[in-house]
Length: 344
Length: 293
Image (tube, rainbow over all chains, first blue to last red; front, side, top):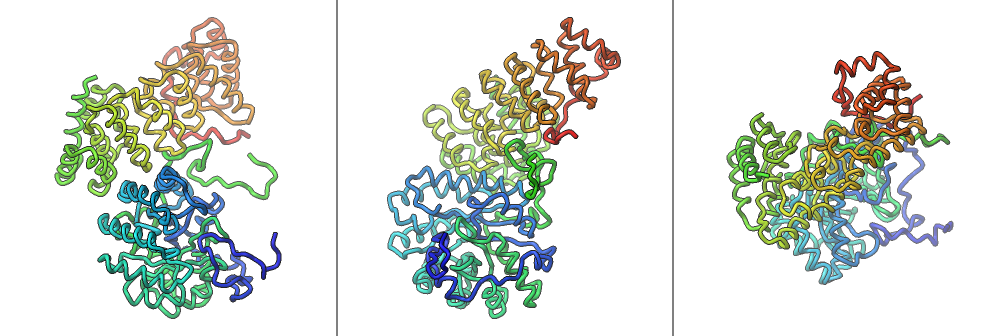
């Protein structure tokens, strides 16, 4: 275990390279304990428009439900290592509309997804060609609320080729687009992503530019796009910085997400940020827009989101329950008494 | 099997359940090329509003007659439309037809899988879908499992004994309503009765219970072990267990079973006078996992 923070390599996950190690930038998490502040957001509901639940545990699902997350979007993504064949793409997409959607429902959280070829794997052109052929089979499915996450990573020619091709798919399927912006050469990559989307005739109100920071947000909003902000420890936005962004830019077309995945990340980023905003005096209606409503407005343009499905809690269908292996019994989430020695 | 009849019923049913615009869209897709039809199968919810199907008694009866045991209870308009589209897929070339259906299975989300499994009794080359059908039994998604196992005549007709027994066991294991399985009693067999007895012993060892209606699968295969199980049930504090034992012993009819039943005259009278039947033990919301205190 590496103890010296100066030698600490940030986890190369959703955000492969940090823009500063933890000791260089101001801390993103002060020692305010979540348990003390969760009461400040009691009764609030949250919609996380970017989170990779396939990498998360049932404990996370329960904690998210308890903290007020009622719905989420899981963008198609890479798995931490490159896939070697079409079948693993197919199975992954299939799991997003099938098993993961079911698993989420059993914890009382409505699960949507976006489907796309991610930028890293766009660089394997022979495989990318095959993936492009099967994408339409998934884009028209129920609960697929956009094409995503697509865009640039290294900003190669292959990435641009498949970004453009998928923008065309989104136009044909009349789906919003969830754009991943690169970690390196970010400002340029973000501008390039937007100008290509406009070149393809997309309405910027149908395009969510994700992973913004203080340097990119103004241009994104000025051009009429939605601006996503990812609260992700160490390598991306901390939530104190997020509060300042909201104070400066207001709530219009801004949405917050966790992008929690298989790296060190936090599936409670939304409720925690909401609590912090509340503490700092940001009005409830602003908090609601950036942690719930704006994401719904943007992605509901797909025609695939009916807020009534989750606004008052997801109705857990008893006929869906599957005992033995999983998950729900008698309409209650079974809870393990974690402090107990006994397992029944 | 008069498939043409079921197609006529489906047509008439769809007309009664869909709006004219929805019906016209669906009908045009039903006559389209295979690839267009398959895309339409996926896209149904974009063109057909999801509503519960409210079939008339005539429709339900006609369906059950044209395909024995077939039921659309609990179906939505989306599921009905999808099943109808599948029934319209050109099956003249076996290889092409199978490839198309396999593609739909391979890329299906939950509701599509439900429609695909519901449609099995209508598909061409029915024996080809056996492996797919056993995959539904392996599924952990409740709706997918139910689409094959509940109110679906396909398994009873095509499953061999081993996968059939797995289907029944998994239904019991998951606290699903056993009585919704088509052909349940006709496919009862001694191997299954033995497995159910073993299963009950494990549950009882864990301080848990067993759905009382499982014992309806035992009367024709009574042996010393099952007779001991009946004694256990008669001594249960749960009246449903006692009634299950009484019904099973009565149906078994063997001398030892009758002698055992005679020790419980009130229960004996209930079964002799047909005051109780297995239908009284058909529960839909079971929780046999709760540990008995």
